[in-house]
Image 1 (cartoon, rainbow, N blue to C red):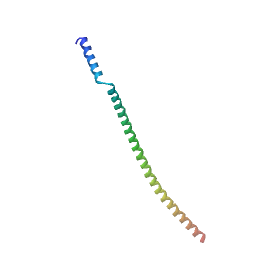
Image 2: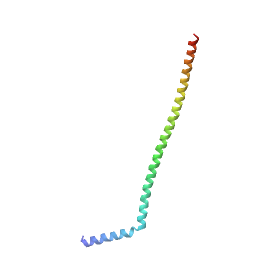
Image 3: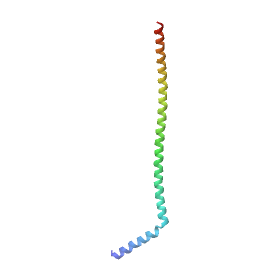
Image 4: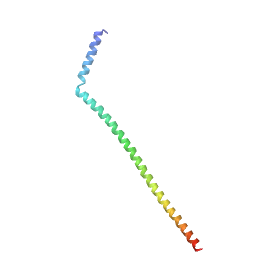
Length: 94
């Protein structure tokens, strides 16, 4: 292919490309990219929120279990204190 034909075809392609892509289309393309990035960031933030929500729920469940265990231990401690007091009373009366 002669060089002049190649230049003409390249020039024609460039001309068609510049005719096809207008300033508003470039702006629209930029907005689309920006929105796509924003959507990705929103999805990532939603994912992080979900992870934190699950962690908070797990922590709440652990707190409930610890409170139950604490109550049980307090009851056991009270029972043993009463046993010791009863033993002390018996020793005093002997």
